[in-house]
Length: 526
Image (cartoon, rainbow, N blue to C red):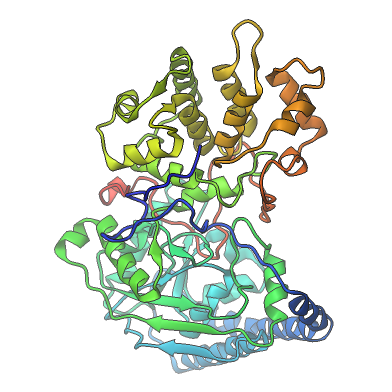
């Protein structure tokens, strides 16, 4: 697998916008400090950091009794007239929360534009979503948000959350997503009686290098929305909390060690959907995203929340930041090639590829292999694997296995060995191992000379899958140890999902509530 030299046609929305495969992975964030910056952080760690942390915790505890009193006896299903004392509690909580953010170094919150009234725009769409510090605009507006139902049981935090009357999503209720969308529609159509709902349509955190695909949940009600932009114009980005990069506490520590943290909130004009957009939430979401990306000066890349599974996967073959498997995953999803792919389907694909005996296909032959018409997306997939106008379809099958089973890398390697191994002894040679590993990692350059010699301890010139597994037991970090890559692969900082789990959890504070089957409400978004 290699990075194509030409532009990929469908990764970026816009006539003149193409994206080169050498892009910045939106789910990866790296922090590098100069010696002077490290010295400043060290000094702040023993002086400013503990003071700020204790004060922030105190302010949160101070807010709890006010939120508790305000939520006692309040109905969760019906909105009540705002009494004078609840209005006063609202002001007090806003002041306390503002003091908490001030203590964390967010001395000024710059606000641009005019916030719309709930009757004008019942839903606020906030982007980009990059951190739990994105709670700042929530505490400034006290708008409702979509939260996991489990959040309300967290001590102190759960009471503060219930005060803003969130819409809860329950993991235990299989019908929860549909109920959540219905509740949002009910509140959005209340003519301003309910508080505004602030939604992060990206559904997960990124490093703010682009806007990824918007989920349609916020746009299904078909009501006017107000796009809201969030910026952190700081010298060092200690804010971003992505799937690969600094963990939650490290982000908190580094941010509180900064003398000042800037944040900007910009309200764009209210966007009223057309009749066509009301019928097609995917189109509505796409058009709102285009407006927000233009105002932010960011590119639009159609990677989705589901694609971050690739960045989450741990193990010896965890993906490097510059992998092009993200692009491959987007393309196969766009063509519908990922839907309904099971283990049996993957084994059938592997058998088909093996029967070709390594025959290399041109783009027309690959299109026929996929049973797809010749489109730009098919050409883009072909360009990820082609060399001198030809490709080995076995590489396509390996990449498909990785994106469909990101947490089961060993099964993918086993299937790859079966496609490449010699029938007489089930072994592969050095060049074949290089193809397998570079495709499984989604990179163009992979030096396996010393690695192959280490596995082939008997100097037979070939290895089996069992040989590879025995080597992994002794050297699980072989990619870095044998310098197969020009730079080390970053360690994922999130708590790993078990191999049996197929769906990741968002690393933001807003839950993913979009229907699993958007066709029930709208046309399917590619």
